[in-house]
Length: 244
Image (tube, rainbow, N blue to C red; front, side, top):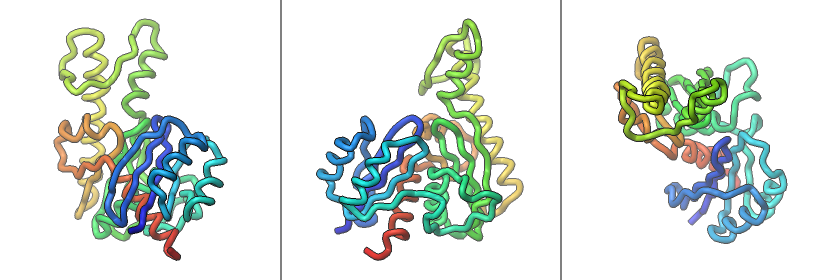
């Protein structure tokens, strides 16, 4: 049995997923990117293959550690991918977006795919049925919207997400929640509509840490998968560690 350890270092959280052969076995959150933390998880799962997707300035020493203990690959512009990137500067594509498109190319290769990542930012990533990543869009994520209203006003409080938010806010707190959460749902539905009007054979994937807040709020049909990025990392690990 081949164990693959996939690391996703995002702006909000450091996460890892463990695959046993092709099956997602477990996901864990990391407290930090210290060498001791990485050493502990390596000892626990003893992976043959590891891959790192990072959009932060992570501890560079862990790359040497991972390379010493496993067949390690860092996601970058030089990564072998299962799709093409006919865009102006492919080297500027974020590691997280590469992983999301890799998952779409692996699972929905014959469709026009809009992959929506809900994290610190919302990323809209379009992979057409020829497996070409054409780009998409980026807008502020949920926590960023709450924080910006607090930071750039004198009196508005800092609010947080909630499962039960109203359409019509009845005080400051619920007005902020309604504006952010209903606003995001309307934005996502609106973007989906514009793509659906332009492309047939169309598929939408919703993923990321805030998926649960919006999967049931959207009027459009979507495929929701919290672990879609990890599945893309696993596919890329297979491609880039094909000598194993």
